[in-house]
Structures are given as C-alpha cells and as structure tokens.
Length: 280
Ligand SMILES: [Zn+2]
Image (cartoon, rainbow, N blue to C red; front, side, top):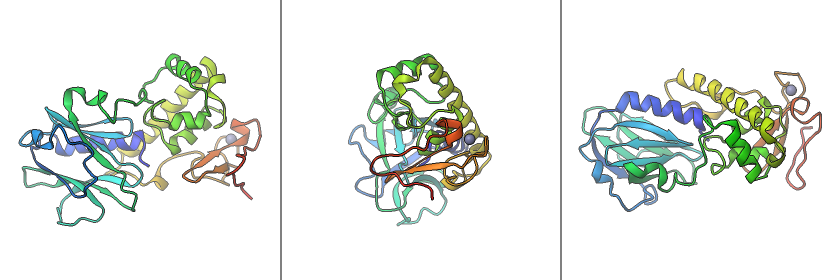
C-alpha cells in the first residue's frame, strides 16, 4: 500500500502537472467509487484545480468549493490518463479537465474495490469523514505528543504505528522500518516506552520518511512496493545492514512483521501464538 512518502511525492507531481486546469466533470466508473452524496462534484465544474494535497495516506484533489478525498487502499492508483478510453482496466473514477491534455483516472486492480473518492466541502475537508478520525501526521508529530498517545493507548508498537487513528501516514513497510531504526521490538508495548521511546520513534519516523521521500521524488510515477528502500521490510533471511544478523519475520494473514533480533529484541525470536511462521 502506498504510504506517506509515496502519496506525498505523487501529490506533488500531480500538482505540478494539473494545477490551474479547470474541471469539466467528475465521472464515477463504478457504483461504489463515489462514497458521498453531498456536496455534489459539479460544484467544482469550470473551476481550476488549486492543488493535490495529502493527509495521512489520502490524496486531496482540491478546488475552491470542494475537495475530492481519494484513498488508494492497497491496489489503487491515481494515474495521468492520456487515452481516456471508455472502459479503462480497473477504472473507478475519472477527473476530466477542460483542456486538450490528459484526465486523471483512479484505478484499482484486483477484486477488492475498496479505493474510493469522497467529495467534501473544502473549508472543512480535514474535519469531515473520512479524514476526521485520523491521528496527527507521522512526519511532524513531536515526541511529547507521541509519548502522551503511547501512554493513552498501550498496544504493540507495530500495530500502533499502522493504526491511522493513532498516527497518520505509516503502513506496513514504514512500521517495520521505523521499529528497526528506533531499535525497538515491533511487539514492544507502547505504554512502557515513555518519553525516551517516543523520541527514538520520532527520529526513526523522520529518517524513514525522509529516505522514502527522496526516493519517490526522484521518480516519474509512484513506485511499486518491491522497489521502495528499506533495511528490513521484505528482507526476510537477508543480513541486517546495521549488524549483520539475519532479518526475521512474523507472518500474518495480511502482512509481515520484519525485524532484526540483535538490533531490536536483544536477540529474542518473536512468536505469535497462532499465526507465526518461522524462518527455516
Ligand atoms: Zn541488526
């Protein structure tokens, strides 16, 4: 799933390419693509695109009266659409502009169909669903606030980082990378981390996001997950680049927790009662 660096760099690219173009129409291509009934997308018709912004893992396609909040979920992409074919593969919705240039096409591959668009009033876009319940931005949270949030909700660090209500913008990959950089177990309970733990996690978040942003900003389009930089994510069985120990995995149905025992758990191998599967 695209996380903060991928979404942020993509928003910047789209702003550079599309800002100022006037929206001709917004076309849902499936019945489930548009998640809201009011306000109507036609409030933005004839008006120039201000910017494509970002909040958490959402793209914000902003016009003066309304914002189109786009969530890519797992397999969604917001693509520059030169062809504007009648039945684009995986097509969910299309922004058609009043110029001879390309449209913007929301696609989602696979059968899940969870990507979507919310049309909300611009002046309350950050405080309306679906953005109203997001935690603070991961890239800018300060250690004191994170420490307070750790204390208020004690759970495994990896799960906390992935929970968009706790902190917004981090997914499975960055959660692995942040835990490794912070030298903390992905299973560490946040309630026990304190201010020092929060400081370590804030530094780790900023480093991992900076690395991801630098990589994404050097590209013409959003990377696929296998290309993204990382020290432990998707590196099961490879040597840790910091200490040389073998990167381990705890497998879950939807994702993999990767970690280095020497760097993060004092050498302890992590297990999960039901679902773990060890590196052989
Ligand atoms: Zn290591």
